[in-house]
Length: 384
Image (cartoon, rainbow, N blue to C red; front, side, top):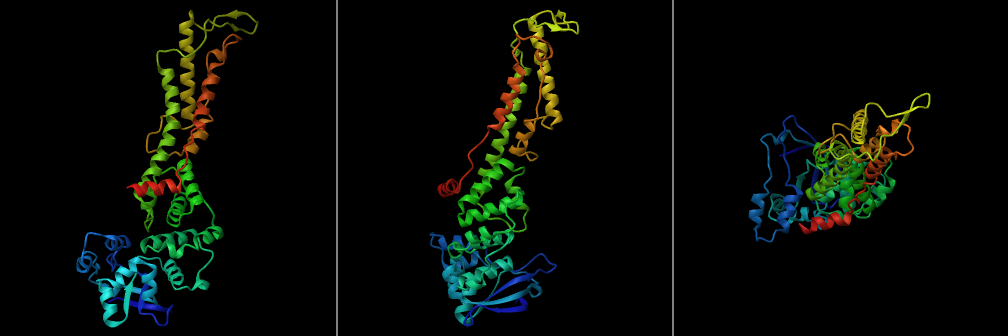
């Protein structure tokens, strides 16, 4: 038996279902919990021929020894028919062989505790299901919007909520932020309510500005975000791939100057001018090859030194939790390198270092992988 205190909310005066929400958590970590939406949904969609009794046994309530300590602050009287019509999860619970359904048939009324559901979101969902549109807010914050997506997924009632996501999106006062948690919330919302532009924007931010694993961001939340693992993994692979390509450009450039094949294009020992205008061979170089090797060494040394100064060296490794593609690209634009050819006065030596650095910067800046669209991700999940 669970205790309740606080407000009694009557949504349907003729209702036969009392939903208990807004739980005051006891000190003990154990609590009464209803079967997850995924579990009931799987049972209702299962074609294996499971009987009601088998389903009941597989989805038994997990009741702690100190249920009497549980307190629910809100009791909401609703219609079981409305809830069952809107949600196949409630239909399975109240019209199948579960304890709640049996009690409802026997006594004509039943209490169902919902300890895991966000109270504010559940009240909104109940009002929508019962057609109490004047009680549905037109402006909600991002967290409440996210909780609505979580409930729509859990109770498989996205269609019932369908008219409101676009209104809430337009009226959201907090707007978009680039925090990983905010982006993950938008991704969840866009996924469940099929908001194409918001999903595209979220994936663009993850690919371009993400600095941490989406999976870790989701796991860090108190309430998990029901985004398919396949989508999360795909987005993470896109993020890592983009940064990896940028890192590889810098790595390849450094590697090229570490190899025996000389990159300096000088075909002769360039002359340098002293303060009096006299020409002489630069430094100690006596032949073209040693000069070119020295020129390459200067490029390599100054490039690595510049990379170190910009925190790009030593080269970062996957999963690139300290960098985003955007931040790496911005730092890469600050890279510099010098050549021996640029240090001596000779009009016959081409400015090959400028070409190398410019090409490096252009290559990194041009790394743009098309973001994952909602349609593509839906198709990926559909195929699995």
